[in-house]
Image 1 (cartoon, rainbow, N blue to C red):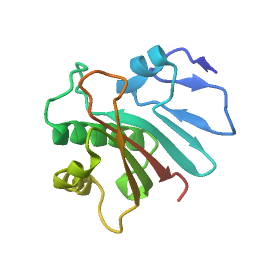
Image 2: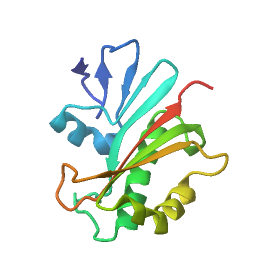
Image 3: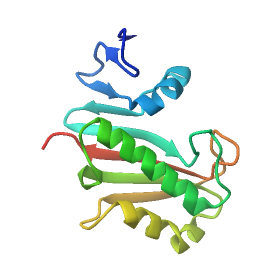
Image 4: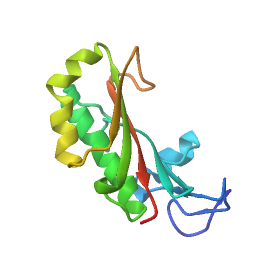
Length: 146
């Protein structure tokens, strides 16, 4: 694949009969790290793990605020694909530390973005994430064809 002249995030070529979804706000980061924030193939949109960092790359200290920022990132990928949170069929959240403690705050944040009927959700406890200070990463799969 190669970057097309002109548009931020514009890509030419195909992989697995699908297409990358790269919101302009994520184009520089995606190019630097060599990944697509979202990839649409086989009637599904696979959304790469979104972290809880703000536009400057800083992670708030409060885990719930990190989760909110991660869901906003998911929303940006969905919007770039012409989709919304109602199209999500599966969510996977990764939490640094004791995963049992997330039930005090994570469902409230999640439910402010995702409404019933709820998609599948898997919550995993991990020892760390790629960026220091980040304690939440969320990926999702959405139905791309309606």
